[in-house]
Image 1 (cartoon, rainbow, N blue to C red):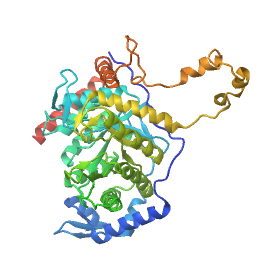
Image 2 (cartoon, rainbow, N blue to C red; image 1 turned 90 degrees about the horizontal axis):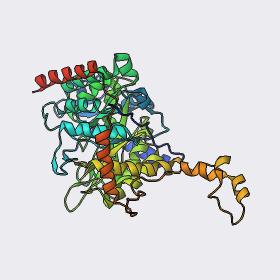
Image 3 (cartoon, rainbow, N blue to C red; image 1 turned 135 degrees about the horizontal axis):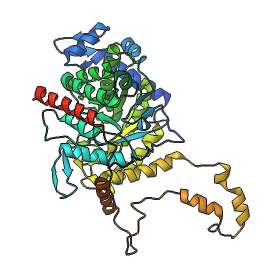
Length: 483
């Protein structure tokens, strides 16, 4: 038996902030153009280097360094669409990237799970991908789904098994970070065709998108770029992320890390537009700051949130939508640290105008999946959603007649206006829940129980048997070819 998926509740900010001023934007763009022209990027893909060379870039085949002149960047990026739709299995869950709302996804690529039954830590499986998808399907705060963990029980073709588990457990848009290489991409496009129904629908409402990580500093991933080209050819959105680490794979200054990461992302977007003008692309700057005592990538350093917001501003300056980093945390368990890492970043990124964001549900720097962490993050999301919505100053909301009716030293409790509008006030179901004993329960415990309830009771609208069979056939073929 299926249960309906709640309508999406995106964050629609009533006010915006500018992270960079016009002079800073100009300086950063000029710096990126200089790096691309004079230093270049390492491109190990023969296919990609050929495309760059055909369009006026300087390509050193021996070193595999590509230098991109400013005029080539400008011409290519002039074709990138600023707005488009990322489709879902059901049209009412489409993501309209028109600059008015922020849709958030789960985090992805985790490698371990806290088992929802045994509560033991273990390697993640394909079943866990489906489990995360069902949680995400039920929560209105989650607009689209990254396969939250890896299907380690299918190592040869894990990305495709992750897609199958996702499509069978949510009606929402799917974004993959792991479809790498033309062979795997070909199968992924076939799966998107099955979900969309036909090529025209796939292009108008693409049910699948791809995020490719660049290699810092100033390098591209061969299989990542070739899968991105395959997706772009099929009309499926592709985005590029830099995770340059200030102090190790990026300069120790924040501005330098931003420029290096920007150059990586722009070089990849330029390639896509050279090969397939007007292909939908998006931009994601998610750098870290090296922990000087360990050398590790720290996702939640104090200054890190600013860099994510700068990335949103740069995306728009290049004329494409942004995928922002939200909810990333270095916390080891759900609690104060994970909440503190999330709240300020999400509000700032919403006000900066990010169209999409990802990061709900994982801890330990995007490594470990706690089912209840997704519920806790969704609670923070709702707080930000209401804060960002701004204040209603309509005549009904200002309630002048009600105030006059009650008068000085009166009481609003019995007034009809109160009975109507108090029901519209929103409260957390985690921090405002009374236990049967009359006391308050630990919010983490409440979140765990809510996750258990969803997994036991929420069943998304199923794919029809024909499409399920077709996906299984594609997976079987991929398993044989990629083994």
